[in-house]
Image: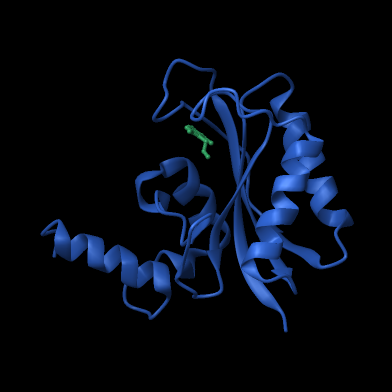
Length: 159
Ligand SMILES: Nc1nc2nc(S)n(CCO)c2c(=O)[nH]1
């Protein structure tokens, strides 16, 4: 069973570009993951914890036979291989890999929420995501994020 997932990638420590490249190379080595699309790389100002360097962000589309927990574990192993140390929770990192979307599934588990809970607040995620997967962000169809977006719009009285 092939699953489609979108993974947010970010780095703001040391050689940021090389960490993104390393992350992509390690993803490509995974036999249960096929990279099917890569966004451009965006340089973005830090949000949340702003006392840190600018990030390089991108989003990759993958096909995978991993279930969400297996995919999460794989991404955490790749982060560790890129010397990811969680010193300050929202602080600088060599490589950050977040599951943004997994099919159209709504996952709420102790260690995993998909769609990513802050996806709609983060231009550094939405810009690369809409670049490679516009249908995930267009109102009107039944894609889960669209329904999330439209729900947010209604809640905020936009519509
Ligand atoms: N621009 C930008 N700001 C951020 N703040 C946090 S936390 N992060 C890490 C997101 O998991 C980022 C990021 O990747 N990019």
